Image (cartoon, rainbow, N blue to C red):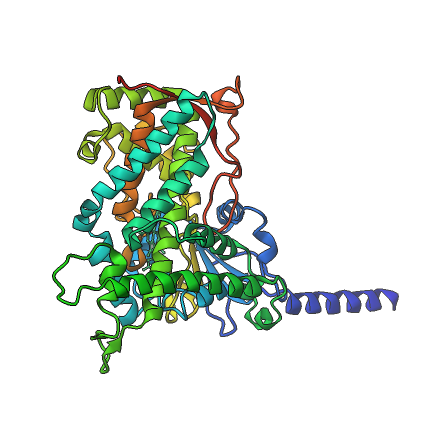
Length: 506
Ligand code: HEM
């Protein structure tokens, strides 16, 4: 009798356990979802993300495969971890997965999806992307801003030279971040600081909030409670940001040339000339009237998409180069051959710097700043590789995992070895799915060209002009701390410090 009671209790326990602990491999209509770990009530698989979600999902994918299904809070999520799988999501079914999820921060910061990065796929997004590409990010526009880059880089080299003369340490993370912020502000709205309100500082604050783990994005029903206080902070910072943006637009409106003869000085100039103008959107009957909110959202998107990504990539590049003196020597030799030691690097030298190009690929392979790209969202139900992917699933493409996969990069995948790109056809344009730090397809990064020119220029100039010694003194290169922190991007946990010595001939 006791045995029967125990068996009954055990069966009830198993039944309750199975109904509570949701099995993710089939949806409620019995359709086959990609394999994945069991999820818990309410939180789903959130507890499995840990401090370094890209690394933890990399390990989980080894068990469940390159197309893995999770539930993050209440959000069905698909993690993609191989080039073949990435190609299915970003090329074969690119249109279905060209959506973006709605996240709380973007609602505050993009004036209700009026920017680009978190704007739903559709005719408005297409128009904004076309504007930004044509007026800011095309090859000819990137070239147009070469003198601005040259002037800013001149200031950067001067300030490092002063530090070198005084025997001071340089905070490379801080210096590079300031340089990228300044140059981005200059090409977007024509100047650096705004009397009292530092735009770059506010963008940093907002980026920090954007990178926080926000429960409301995974359990939207908890959003009204604002448990972490993120919405409150976003509201405060977005108000400050709005003041600065209004001022920038006012200045540009006042400077409009009524004759329309003067060329546009910067990107905001171009956008202000469209203010209150009707724009024809593809597939829409009514023309779209451009308002201030559109311009503000686009400026913010460009600022936030470009500054942190470029800075973080350059700082990782410097870190790896300093950790590998052999690579530093090869880079300096290449620069001496192409440029000599009597002058600075010019943009026209960049195509000749083949080894530098390999170094950049290697950096973006090992340190992709957006380890999951920017999340995509499925716009309808779709079957991929035999698996059912429901509409509104969040898609995370784990480029970090792909960059370290020994099946792609051989046993030395974890090593920093730029030479692996010698005689290798893989480029960064998103056609080779082994290496997609800028994404691929419709939502791929439109700023890649600008980012690559800036990265090449800053790195080559600082390596050509200076020798660098790691700090603290006596530290061996391989002892440099390479800890990363996970947020909106994947920066170094600590600032990179080094002591420069000027090495060009006066
Ligand atoms: C999107 C990487 C620099 C503007 C993206 C995405 C990635 C990325 C991974 C998402 C792609 C996807 O979801 O499939 C990078 C890296 C950079 C960089 C690694 C520097 C090293 C820039 C710059 C700009 C920029 C300099 C502009 C000035 C954007 C925009 C989007 C985007 C606007 C959103 C595109 C859309 O949703 O349609 N970037 N980016 N990025 N990037 Fe970049």
